[in-house]
Structures are given as C-alpha cells and as structure tokens.
Image: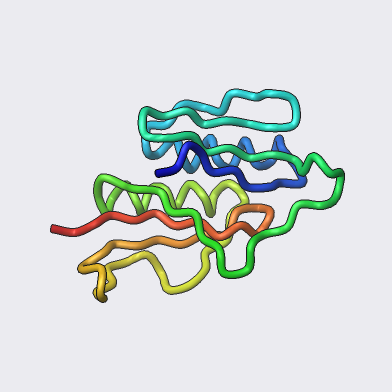
Amino acid sequence: MFSHIMIGANDLDKAKSFYDAVLGTMGVPAAMVDGHRIFYMTPTGVFSVSKPINGEPASFANGGTVGFACSSPEQADAWHAAGVANGGTTCEDPPGVREGGMGKLYLAYLRDPDGNKICALHRMG
C-alpha cells in the first residue's frame, strides 16, 4: 500500500544518529544521505527523514504515529532503549502488552528528537 513514509526534522545529523540507532535494532542498515534527506531502504518499504523543502521548521503531526514492525517483544524493548539512549523520549504507557480490538500487541512508544511519535509493534500469537 505504501511506497514510503517521510517525516520532517530540523537537525538531520541528530535525526540520522537517532534513527540509525533505533532502526539498527531491527537490522535496518544506516541511512543513505541525499542532500537534505536520509533514506532507510528495506525490502518492505522506505522510511525517510527530510528537512522541509519550504524552509519552514519541521513540526510533528498531532495525532500521527509511524509504527515499525518488530519480530519480538525483546526487539521492541531494544528499539525503545536505543531511542531513549539517542535523544528520544518515552511517551504513552511503558513498553508492554496491550489487548484490544486488534488482538494482543506488544507496543513501545517514543518521540524522536523533533517530537515525531513513533511506535515499535509486535503482534503476539
């Protein structure tokens, strides 16, 4: 359904350090830098971060969340720990199991250094 997801950042070097660490816990290679943008290429899609091309400051989407699929609760915990260690802040409930209409999920939430809300998600059996 999606070809890519792109979010904004005000400090591309800081964003690259953060996302290299966070996505590295999932086996994603370090970002490819292309001028004012960085790209994380995977067989299932592309995640990118860009300085806004209109020259205005980047801002986060209120109500928006980008979710990353994890293979286990342990990988989600490593993702969360790498994010906090690299300038992210924890948000919502602590990482853990939540049950609802989508079934049993292991979730971990962060805000990146620019305030974008991101989530690690593992669908439990």
